[in-house]
Amino acid sequence: MANSMDYDVIIVGAGNGGLTCANEIASNGYRVLLLDKHNLPGGVASSFVRGRFEYEASLHELCDLGTEEHPGKVKLLLDRLGVSEPFENEMTLFRTVVKGENGYDVSVKAGREDFVRSMLEICPESGKSLEKLLKLLDSTAKALEYNERTHGKPSKLVMLLKYSGFLISASHSLDDVLLSLGFEDKARSILETYWSYLGVPANEINAFHYLEMMFGYINGGAAVPRNRSYAISLALADRALDKGCEIRLDSEVTEFILDGDRICGVKIASGEEFRAREVVSNIIPHNVANMLPSDKVRDRDKKLLNARRFGISFLCIYIGLDVSAEELGMNYTTFISDSLFSDRNTLRRQFPDVYVVNCLNAVVDDATPPGTSTLFITVPVYPQYFMEDVTAGNYRAFKNAAAEHYIDDCERTLGVSIREHIEEISVTTPVTFARYFNAPEGTAYGYELSHWDGLMARMLDKINKFDFDGLTFCGGHGETGDGFGVTYLSGIEAAEKVVRSLRFKDRLTKIRNITRIARKDADKSAANVSGKPAADASGKPAAKASGKMKGA
Ligand SMILES: Cc1cc2nc3c(=O)[nH]c(=O)nc-3n(C[C@H](O)[C@H](O)[C@H](O)COP(=O)(O)OP(=O)(O)OC[C@H]3O[C@@H](n4cnc5c(N)ncnc54)[C@H](O)[C@@H]3O)c2cc1C
Image (cartoon, rainbow, N blue to C red; front, side):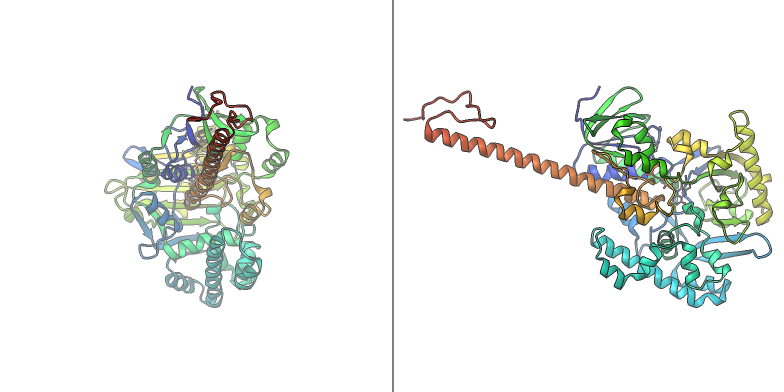
């Protein structure tokens, strides 16, 4: 058993949030222990190898990396932490194919001017609406900057007078906002393409949340790491080790240890216990609550957790092909859908008709051996519909049927030949996320950003937060939702809060020590003057007082 208070901070979970948090706290000179149940750091920011292919496990594209001339928040953050992994910037945002009579097959470009140009080529009547959209995107970005400058306490009047666009986009759905900007159906449908990345349909997702992501993609393109997201996870783990952080893998936390009502440590599956002054959780509050004695979790928090809906999960099909991306005729990101617009019912089917196909080699040409390529098909699913009839006995057959369904659909829709070139194939389902990451109901996206539990509600309303003394959260289940950029940043925010708290406590201890010493000195001088034994802090006479002044 480890000594009590071995560490200043214990971080549970080495996903994106846990890794950046560990880096930031260790940079401040505090002793950090980072624990993960998995045998690799990174959480879903990972890769895996089958045959001669190394697949990206999760990342399609990173938002807000920016460009060399205009680095975004994520680039600045990675640079500061000493992570210099190379990226490619894909400047075709996406190709999107909607099947059927009113459907389309179009590509949209990144870069402000190219974005407008490509949209105008597809929807010539949308010029005025695009102008208004760009203004709204700018105003939203400026409002965010102002919010950051004021440390999350903006003046309501300034917001109202200067950033009214932000207030509108923050309080309406994406659908409502695009309609109010005057977009016709086709343009609106194209602009809503990214909804499956956030897991909430356009008639429900908060416009501000969506537009912020879109702004990042339009400005900087879609950033793709040359060596998969796992290389970034490894670099973050290495930098944390350089800064003195201890990392223990294969260490599943099974219990949070309490000192009264405050979390002061954790117990891992092997039975070892670790204590620290602060604990950070990169794991979802549901799992934390289930590891705490029920009577210690406040009723308010139980209600919040029960009311929250888990975010979507995914069916992922990873395919290694014995043909190059060029021969295959694939670009990097292609969205495929059956209808112009989607709503919640779109995902209430076993095999939803909306998915995205990525061909890594279209951006990183040497990602696999010459003459080969990989495809990554991602289907957003609600596990309760997707897995409805699945049992342990038919799981394998179910996975095969799901893979066949989407490969057939992709071949038919894009006119490409996949089956005859398959060399390796792997399929993951919500069960995979549940098994590897302890994700309840296999959620890949933490909690759904629904109306009452959306981004704004989480940021502005403390009631929408699970609170426990001694514990700070980071990760995709937090205030700002899921995504690589936001989870990296969430780790920094959590670290800053923890460091503030540690510094405050350190200062308090220092002041107490100084006061104690000063009081002792004062008592000593008083004793010297009066000749009486000095009292200690408790008021009792000091044991070794001589009773006589020196030299008297
Ligand atoms: C298929 C897929 C595609 C995605 N595509 C994109 C994309 O294109 N762009 C984008 O920006 N984002 C994307 N995302 C989202 C992005 O990957 C996540 O938001 C981000 O990686 C989550 O980071 P996190 O900090 O929440 O940690 P997580 O990855 O959730 O890691 C949590 C860690 O905690 C560990 N853990 C759990 N329980 C315990 C325990 N009891 N004890 C110890 N350790 C524990 C787990 O092993 C894991 O390592 C995608 C996600 C998925 C699943």
